[in-house]
Each structure stands twice: as C-alpha cells, then as structure tokens.
Length: 249
Length: 249
DNA sequence: CGTGACTTTGAGCAGATTCAAGTCTTGTGG
DNA sequence: CCACAAGACTTGAATCTGCTCAAAGTCACG
Image (cartoon, rainbow over all chains, first blue to last red):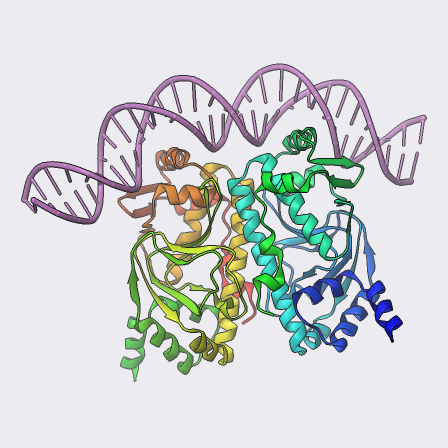
C-alpha cells in the first residue's frame, strides 16, 4: 500500500501535479487525469495547435515543452499573451466558445494530450475537477493581468526579470526546476514577442542581467544566480500564482 | 400589451441591455436584473470600490460612469487593466476568490449596485443568467488579451485609436453613444495609465489624432470624426467584443 | 561541414520620457 | 455671480530608452 502511494507519486505527471495544487481531488479524479496524460502525442516546434477563427474542439493539455497563445498584426508583429507549460490546460471554455480570438502554437517541441469535447464534459461532471479547473483558469486570468502591468509599466530589464521569476514559480509547481534554474526552450525572438520588445533589445537586456550576476544562460538552460535580488529587481510577488491563496479551497 | 413591451424597452438599464446581448433571457431573468439596477448608489470619482488584498464580497454592477481595475507599483506607477462601464459586472468570481490581486476604483463619478453574496448565488441558480454572465466574462477576457496586444505591439497613436474604437462599440451596446461620439469622463492621466504611456505623450498623440481629423474633444465629449479611418489606423476588428460571435448562443 | 536559424554587436535614429513652466477648466466658497 | 484654488491640459527643450539596419559570429542539425 505504501509502495503504491509512493509509486503514484513518482509517476504523476504535470497535469495531475498542477491540478492537485488547485484543489483537493478524489482518487477517481486523479485516475482520470493520469489517464489523460497517459496518451500524448509529439508536436514539433513552431506548429499551430489552434488558429485564430477556429472553433475549438475539446481541450488541450501540455505535458512537455512550451506553447503559447498569440496574435499577429497585419504587419507580421506578434504578441504572445500566455505561455502554456507542462500541466497547463488550454481552452477549457471550448464548450462555450464559437470562435477563437487568438491562436495557440508551440514555441518548442512539445508533447500534448487532446481531450475530446465529450470527454471534456465528463470531466466537468466531477465537481472537484470542475472546481480545480476553474481555479486554474482564475490563476491564468491573474497572470494575464500581471503581464499587462509588466509590459505597460516596467522597463526592459524588469520585464525579463519578472518573466523569469514567474516561470520559476510555475515550473517549480510541476517539478521542472532544479538548482535555481530550469530549461527555457525558447528563442530571444519569442521573449521579445512576449515582452513587447525587439529581439535586439532583449539580447542587450539579457546581457545586463547577466553582467549584474542575476542570471546565466547556457544553451536552453537558464540559471537564476540570485533569485532574491532578481525578484527585487522585478518587484515580483508570487501571490497571483498561488491557487490556494487566490481561491478558496 | 404592446405598450408594456415598449415601456419595458424604454426604461431598460445598461445591465439588462448588456446581458440581453450575451444570451437569451427569460422574462423572470430580466425582472431580476431590472431589480438590481433599480437601487443604485452614487460614488464619487477617485474612490476605491475594492482594494488589493480584499476578499471580495458579492458582485458590483456599474450603471453610470467609468470605473477600472488597476494595480499600483511601489514607485506609484499605475496600470489600468480594464474599464468598467455601465452594464459591466465586476467580480462574478467573488464566490471563488479569496484575495483580490488588483484593485477596483472609479475614474469618474459613478452609480453602482452591489449584489450581496447570497443574492449573487440566486442569480447563478438561473441557467440563462449564468450562461449570459459567463459569456460576458469571456468577452472581458478577450478584451484583456486585446489590450495586451495594444500595449505590446502598437504605437502610441494606434493605442489610443484602438481604445477609442473599443469604447465606441462597448458604449453603443448599452446605448451610450450618439452621433459618432460619446462621453469619456476620464483624464489624460487615466488614458496614460491605460495605454502604458505618459500623460504628456498622450496629450501629444491626441493632438496628432485631432490634426489628422480623426477625433475631436470638447470637454468630456469625444467625437470620432472619421470612424472607418480611425479603425483602419488602429487595425481594429470588433470581433472580440461580440458575445454572440464569440460564444455559442 | 555547410546551411539556416539564432545570437551578438555597432552605429545612428526615433519614439517616448522627464522636467518645467504656463494656460485653461472646473468646482467651490464668499 | 465672481474670484480663487486645484487639478488638468498644453507646450518646449533636453535626455534616454528602445528601435532599425546591418554585419559578423555561433550553434545545431542534416
């Protein structure tokens, strides 16, 4: 029995980990989630999962890699509006939405599971799951608001610092950080389209953070050399990311 | 009978008007909404309705004036994250949220109704109302995403143009526009905190729009002198604001 | 080991900010 | 109904942050 629990813990995927933080689940709920994560498919980097104007079908769960919500302007400029990282659920609203006002695409190679419309409805028939998903959506909304502040009222360096802090917290929640760092499998162009800057300026600002001894990047690995100081620079307060703090249990 | 219907139409307030656009309501639903709007109280400009960190109680409906969601940085910089205009409902999530991650305050003198927690739950017991409120929340989310694009990827002039187009559509929906214009009872400082700029730069950019013959402002009244051209400048597509388009009926 | 995508760096420029002063509005009390 | 005060708007000049354009360097992958 002990072993089984331990076994469960070891193999639990990001979706399960994340939703457990969003509310208390029953064992049956957890089995459902584990089932969803069991069958994933690979998607290459730079692929669109949903295009603007589509009618979404069912719900998508990311289990590996980075995806994003984004919009394009006519001149080709892109604004990324959210990162979808392992454990994140996309388009829970599928059942209500007629037409996507934005696209969803991968930033790196990903693994994902699709939950068909009907199975999705089954999920929503389980109160604890519904509650957890709703809480997760609440956190997504709070994150979007924080991004608006980030772009609207912070300097280039501060924006990057804030983003890196946010990702550290989010990735920690699903066990994807180690030793003050994590894999950030995206380009400086992606960072630019996230923070409303140019890739050139992202490059210089990253240089500043590096020279200040706050971060280090080798390959895809990002190390936060001085997290407390980085958080101070970014004026980062993690409250908005904590489901149990934000939402009632 | 005809007269009654007409009477109903004449006196219907912004809340009712807005939610009717968000989904088909029964007569009983409409009576409930009309009841909510019947007793409002006045709030002066610059007052906080909800403070960051508060546990929200019930739900707020704006019936007159402009309010907003906002956050402050430690240095005093403010970022406005949403406008609440007549008919808008604030903190529908009240029943789930433990702690507000942002504040809500008035930009102009307002009239508003508060719906207590319990009465709010009564609302949610009516499926058509729940559905309409959910659709309204969906539009709010889409609007927030559009604002991120606005600040992240549009120039100063484009940002203002886009905001003015958005407000024209939203105010039209509740009958608050006339002759290509509307009352915009907020300061250039508020516009700056909305668009991520300085009030000085807002002033100069407004001048540009005025010189281009696109807008005119006298007192609180804003006139859109050439809406088609303004929409073109802003690359404005109203899709994201149309509930019936965005959400399934 | 070559090719394409990404990163890095430089130089010049443009958009936006800051600071500051002056003007206009608006609301209030006398 | 006027005068005043406070806040909001306008404008100029100097500065700075971030952008554009361009070229060279690096890395990963076939």
